[in-house]
Length: 119
Image 1 (cartoon, rainbow, N blue to C red):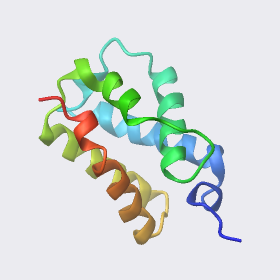
Image 2: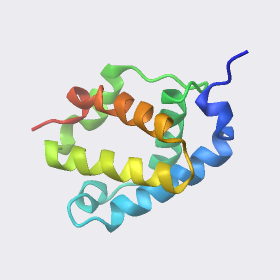
Image 3: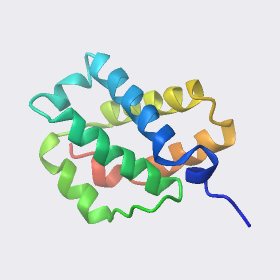
């Protein structure tokens, strides 16, 4: 039986730590931090943990329409999206994700760019 990336990397417990570190890095970015002003970060990290878990074959599901609605007012540009993806890749690598799995998750994220980039 094939194990999903979600199961392979320890489920919600590890993914939550990865996502928390990922958001710490985004908040440290002069370019990205402003996107999170006045945001309940605990709630966002919880939500993003479920989203990343869904990309890894976990139990949560997210529609592209919901993704688009969530980002519509944020005015995200290509450069910010690219930086976010790079920080995600770096974070995954630092948590010892296999290179192939990092590429898979980056590809999954990039495939949703049209629902996230809004300018």
